Image (cartoon, rainbow, N blue to C red; front, side, top):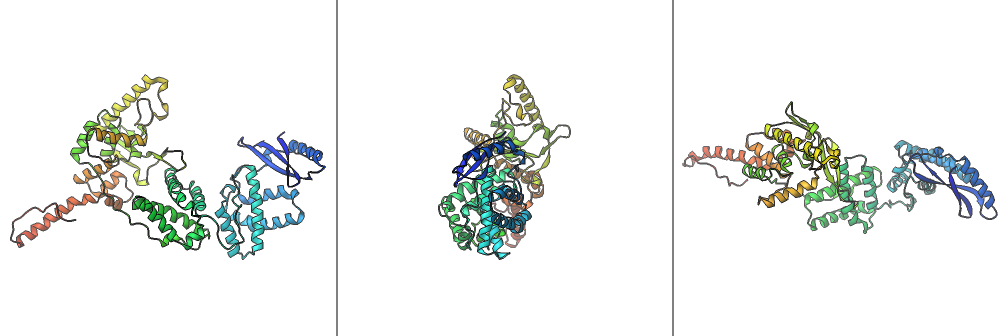
Length: 509
């Protein structure tokens, strides 16, 4: 028998039942007795006892993922005894003809009901079905009461219908609230690392700026300058144009969703001028600098990561995701198909590790030849790891046995450690400061200098499009321009009466 007690509310006794659902989570259910408080306590207690005996938790709809139209039907059945006949008939009519069919067509779950969802629905009824203000208010009343019940069940934390005035012709959804709702919707649609990037941008930059301004979606639609002002504010803070462009991408995508829901009639982000993208100039080490780096990093925990990044052009996430199972010593191949990276979703909990099978893009998954020097280094590392595992015994972390880049205790090397320790190596040995990712650029530069085409470099690095390769490594065209300059000079020299000469490498590009 479930636990329960009586509660007084609005002059009547209510029964509050406490039970555990199918997920073994504690839940409560409120049931009205229909008995006035005065003179009915004993009757109410008897009713409570009977209800506790007959109550079966399995009869309650389980899960916040229940379809909203099904939830409404079950809520109405449960409320039948608490409503007068006229009200119940009105509620049933509206649920059957309007609310139910609409949300059934969208396959909307209870947990997916947001303020913007309801605003979109009310706008739909106004524009498509020409519903009167009175009808809209009736629909809103039903939805509000049903979602109150969902709150009691613990399926949602708060009622999104509260605070909406559907009788007005304006959309009252705050821009910041909508951005957060859109972000939550995107969580199941994009990769974890991508979601973390979206979340960090929205929670740490966009929402803090707009929160105190109190702009609604309508305000944003009517005043695109609000968005333009935000971009300028970010640029004035010293952020790069490329960073602000990422802010623009999030805002535009979210507002496009609002447009598709008929919450706004146009996307104001399409009316602003986004910052001009800055040309990226890759930094890199030449052959001599790499030789020195390889020498000073021998025996260091980053010896292999440095070699993998410089020789194979691997990204940091690909270096850390490399597993022993990806090394085929017989066929002399290395398969790049797993990544480990770090992300922050802006919730104040700090960075967290993201790992997944797969790579940055489909083209990033690639098979590269295992050359003898790196094969020898890998064999040596495997022997050292086996030795460390024997010496450390139970203190050794067996969780990352298949990962190549681990420390003496078997802990996988963290992304930030690579970044920070690489900078320490350079400073300690008085080497020119570059990023760890710039070793990837160094790889591409050396490949091109040795006659490898941009197409082949694209495949080696795992770029999805050759334009990405050419845009990043525009400096690689320099040697070909020198060749062209010398060819032209050989033709012009006789005309000018001069001898054959080499073109200066300091011409203007």
